[in-house]
Image (cartoon, rainbow, N blue to C red; front, side, top):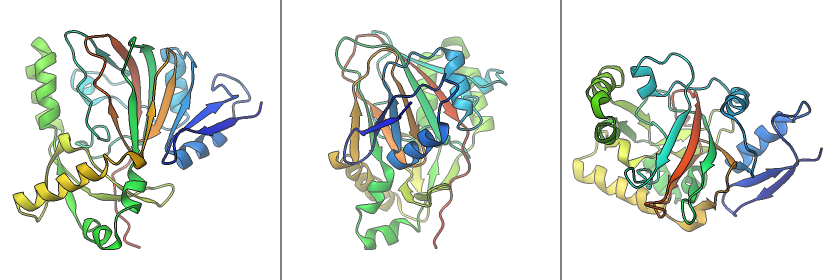
Length: 280
């Protein structure tokens, strides 16, 4: 079968058609190359089961055990089910890369749509590589020297509001197992060598060696910069769609425009390495 790769926007994203990861002749190498090039890829109406999604995810690396699941005793890879509804509004409508408060954030994520709201509920991605590339050389030089402290405080507050009786144990485990971590503000992609902005405002405490006002000013600038539409692609979901994105070269957010409708999505993360900056 011939693989069809159709760009979604000028910045990033591509639709993959003409191939199915469940087929014996599936060309994983071609799909992986498309992912590195386009940063996020979409398989429309694929309709994977949990087992099939996990099997496909293993082609990209080691499926992650989500930190909260690990704290609660899980030792095997876990699928995170994100369920929005009348009593659980969307909490991901801000540009971020996932769980940046861990020492080794994920390399990839696979998101499978289970329940689509009647209206709204799109997901948006931003190219963190193009966000870096479109900065002036002077700003690039300044940002490349900065180290950012990420922590789980904002995440823990959301967990505490939803986890009920388990919230105390989860927060205790987060404090014990996931202390604040330092990451470069500009990271080097380990496969492509490209530079990208590593950003998740809700998980960032401060920038090292800057005053509080200076740190806030830089973070405000980046937050505004990554909102530029020219850096984005947007996906309107249908049931059974699968999105795969490179966590190291993108940011994403879930549009909070479908409340109080239900929206259920199944996410699998793939283990990554410690972010680094290569000055060469």
